[in-house]
Length: 399
Figure 1 (cartoon, one colour):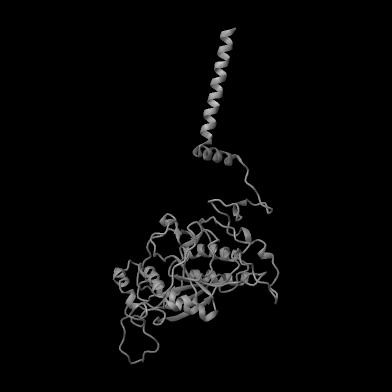
Figure 2: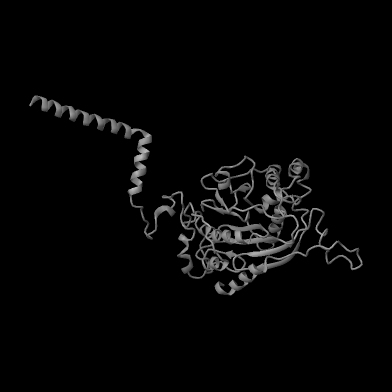
């Protein structure tokens, strides 16, 4: 009997000892995190009053993000604008934080237009129930990137609507097949957008970058803003301190202080760093959102034909301090070939010339008839006819 009792007590003490060891392990931070992880797996997600997951609210976010159109369902049912509209809140109640970004096949501009019924001709929008506090123009340098443009428009329109902005989207299309010049197209976009409206902020936006968090507000700061601080292709980190590429924002005053952008960067590379240097030379600083907010996903693609690496970019950067007042918005030359107000954006097709000058390859109509003949070249082109036809077919359906 005594032996049995001793054995029983021995097993009891062993059991208690094991429990103490387990409790000690669980109290350590690493084990606590693991247990919390498994608890979250089996816990039901919290829901909001609308029945959707709380991930889209400012207080309950996850890494996958919410549908960018989730917060806009009530706007489509709002009544028309009145004469005496209150100002929108300083912080939009529609902002939801992280956005889920994917690239489904078969997306069409007609589908994008149907999902944005409040966007009017030319890609313009104003909040239906309040007066916007900010007027922002989006400038997109473009050539032969129609597939990417559809995805950008799909995400950018609701992204901007969630921020309750008065906005317009301008696609600046470079005509012809000569070397691409992104910075010069952005100069053109600034001038042409300001001709239409007195915008207080202009966002210069690469066509292949999709914003992943609507807390990254498309409004200007006191200094030029670099919005695309964390791209997935750079591991969601800033590649280097003076980087100013992808998506950036300037007010008209910022633009004038730095003499706009350089016009002489033909091909890929260099112009973003030149612009970053101009910000400093203009007596300003680069502002940025946090790394968690300024996130962008890039649509993967090969280097564009006609946009080869600029072999002179480093030599040109070394001369920025001497050239920034001599080459910029005060010297930009171009010819507007067409201006089309499509349902989702305003397309401005321009001839910006070549490294040798605006009229080096395409004769100007101002040249006298007896002038020496120029070498034959390919005439400037407008956006592909197929895309134009699709855009024109969409115009009467929603507006």
